[in-house]
Image 1 (tube, helix red, strand yellow):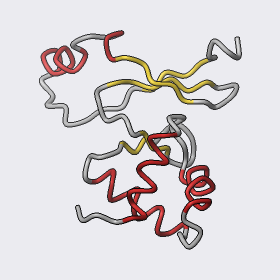
Image 2 (cartoon, rainbow, N blue to C red; image 1 turned 135 degrees about the vertical axis):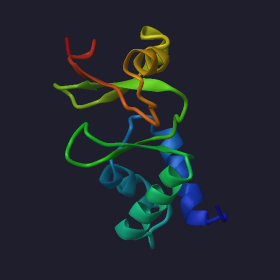
Image 3 (spheres, rainbow, N blue to C red; image 1 turned 90 degrees about the vertical axis):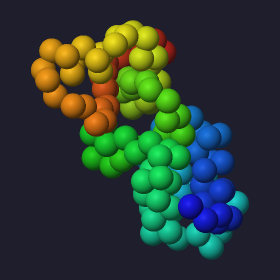
Image 4 (cartoon, rainbow, N blue to C red; image 1 turned 90 degrees about the horizontal axis):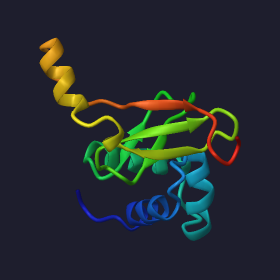
Length: 123
């Protein structure tokens, strides 16, 4: 992927805001540093970064997608009260991929596991 100043600003903003932001939230942040950036350009760059495996696009949490700079194996927890998204170590369910494949015969190409409930702060 070729270097782009806008893409670099988007990636840095995503890394600095590890709240798994949606595009609109990220747009408000990036717009301060890059005022000429359009929302369409932001979406295009997010999709390119996700397609290249540099970031992760998380779908299914809400109507709009969220983005995660952490591409290592992990799960997510969505607080249904405050809507914050937290990373959950994949150590909570070790060998889940291997067990799924061995018990079903399926070949898993990718997966997203999302827990939903109330976070510690909201409890």
